[in-house]
Image (cartoon, rainbow, N blue to C red; front, side):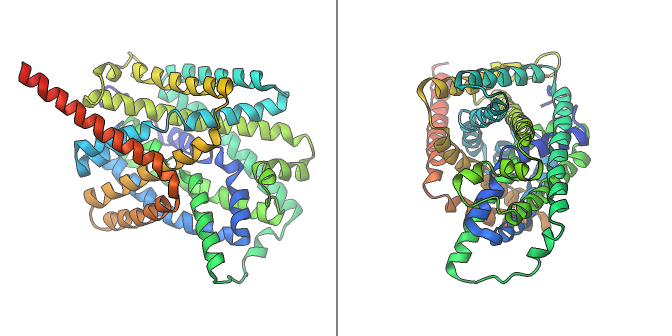
Length: 427
């Protein structure tokens, strides 16, 4: 791991993680949660944030004690052995052809709406986004982190602007939710449970930042702060935005949920708000995808170093950039984008299966924490494990993709070991 340079500081780490956690989910999740559970969606937000605290502690502790580009897969290796590390690595990489292309296309459509682009023009915007990310990351992680920090400040500033405008028109916003009675029936509890499952996606991103933990200048000091400051910023913004969604009734139908910010800003600023939505949507999606592609490349680099795949992928440039691992990531993303616009892949269905993988990764990291950590840290990891199990099994058939990847990864690992054993005998 010494080949990767330690270039990240606290502010760059926060910039990367905040922009990733906000991602594209901030544009739809608050409204969807409100549609599912109404005013009780606030309970879902509070419960999720409370349970994300032990999860954040678990990732923080593991990332500080076991900094490695392999991220969750490395934690799993320390806790459960090489075999489990391998399928965890493949499990994480299985998101690459599914998640990033969807977010890139979403960002391209946001900016496309501003310039009234047609499908072909949106396709070229997607390609331009991928090329821009690649060139930015050729400059090194320090440069990419600085760019994402600037973008994070812009995104947070715009969200705070929305909150201030909403408070200006409805100053009693927060007092409406101080006293309300919970009808403790089965339907209410079920709706809150479903909303929790949805809200969880606003905090997906912790598993990505741990892949960069070994590149922090001061891992013990800055990595935990990066996680907790980022979580506090994102959690606070999400709750405030959700209160505004409820107050202005910017939810209720699929059409409104998908464009609730347009609904809000048109009311607050008029039709010119479409430009603001286009800009914030584009940059949010851009920065979210960039961290994930960085983390995928570090995973491939780690797998090359560990011998799971060819050592060719563990080579780095003079700037400490794992270029051989980075290029396949961008090619994979580009391939899916091309397929989407050539044969019409339904990306919405792919997202559902990607969700199952993310929760599985959180669950594996939490189980690793139970084994590797001690004292209060272990108790927090146990709490994290229970919550992740609840979310995972609440997904139903959506976990099938993750289960198939795990089975195939076990088969690949067994075949690889058998091949090595035969070669040793021949020698």
